[in-house]
Amino acid sequence: MKLPELKIGRLVAKVPIIQGGMAIRLSTARLAAAVAREGGIGLIAASGMSFDELRREIRLARELTDGVGIIGINAMVAAREFAGLVSTAIEEGIDLVVAGAGFSRDMFGMGKESGTPIVPIVSSVKLAKISQSLGAAAVIVEGKEAGGHLGTDHSVREILPDIKAAVSIPVIGAGGIITGRDIVEVLRLGADGVQMGSRFAASEESNGAPALKEFYLKAKPEDIVLINSPVGLPGRAVRNPFAQQSLEGADLRPATCDACLKHCARNFCIIKALIRAQQGDVETGLVFTGENIHRIKEILPVKEIFARLIHEAEQVE
View 1: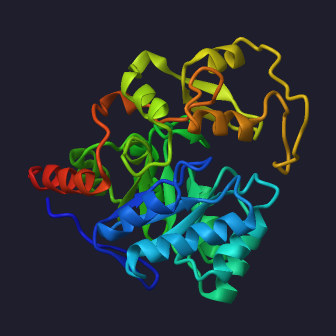
View 2 (view 1 turned 120 degrees about the vertical axis):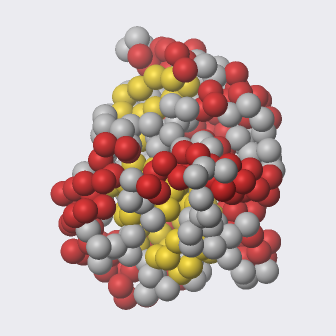
């Protein structure tokens, strides 16, 4: 199957792949730019960044792409600075905003005022229809297979067809997509494109430490667990000592709190746990990942990942 273009408002991606926005600092300018250069949509994960850091990352991504290609941000609605991050990105002329881990009506007004496409991550027909009515340019439909914060316990393959039938805006499938064959399968369910996180987390351009990337390659299916995130949603992660302690209800409460979330259960500090993992501490860090991470066997450059995905898709009749 020849992969189609993905159109979101005035934006046209030559390859219908959005690189998932993975925080904290896994998806930075280098990764987003590499994806954009290959014809996909690259996302900078804004959550956990200061406004100035986000500005620098957006400007760097533009430099790395020579201003060509589509660069967006992903931000957690649950983050206290969500509105400020979105405003900062819009001021910098970001191409689109992807929002997950919660839902905000205010962001649609911000997008309408600036002409910036707003793309919420949803997991139900109801939320997809609300998003369209508020002015969403597209929706990302995320199933239980995805890494990080989850809004459903159903597979993307179950929920996507119903959402596609309920809205007239582009629908992007997400969760557990690793190969070109996976992409074709999700497109044939009605998706206009796909979002892929884990495959790009395990890329050369991902900003994760080498120890983290090696940890991804060692993950087995039975290692993937659901933990209770302080955000108030379940989170899909790799079992390690930190995740195991969380599952067992150990006291992981932080001694100090930076108040980074609008509402926090304070069972542990998610920002600091994700930063530890990003920096290579796979013992006491929180390693978010999709449930099919075990299918990834190599750390590859983004260019090679795209070449393989396109070739694999073209082999599917």
